[in-house]
Image (cartoon, one colour):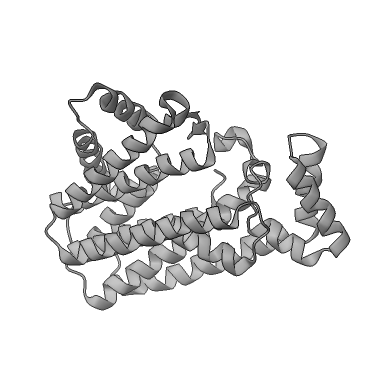
Length: 322
């Protein structure tokens, strides 16, 4: 990420300070939970994309763009907290999740606190276009969460999977690029193209992430591999393999997953199965296709360091190892 954010390093430093300021509260438990959130920081992909898009369209790392990035990051963090509660997840980014430390009740309320803070920051921008985009993205994201709950442990189709990750992952990445374009004074065409860029980048990123859950190195990734299968979450590599295998073998794999998979021979059998029936190669090709389509959307931008960083972020989405 260092090379990607180089053109906006000053803005990202200011973003970090404003994010910490937005989390200040007089309530002690809120402050404790906020410190935990800041310490377990993520990759900051969304704020970086907002700032890069704004700069690529001739805008600056203005206070409004940085505040928008803060609002989107608060919204993203709120959804992750609620997601961990729904999934009964004990860890997030390699450290204990909020619900593992403070329980579900306090964690739900902290998620609500962050959501209210996000709205407060975004409303302060006084941009109807930004608010409309943010509300639409939030609605899509929640629909994605509910779709995942509805499908449960069932083996889903590729179209349902793509709809799910579009809502859960791409919505806020697209919002980041769209808001950066809006606040930098982009034309309607530029705004639409940058929103599409973010949508496609999000799909490429999530598919690659799902592939790495089968092929990645847990040490490099900073988290164990195989989490999706162990949690009975069916992603594109496995969907493809199940479509290509015989009914009998598919039934055996489904039964194995349903009974619970741990590290060792069972997990290695699943990995071999996914490789054998084209799951990995197919998913990587799909991710690459989305990234190529995303790259074409950047033709709406003039040549600049920021555009180069957006291209680099797009390549990183499919070439990364973590």
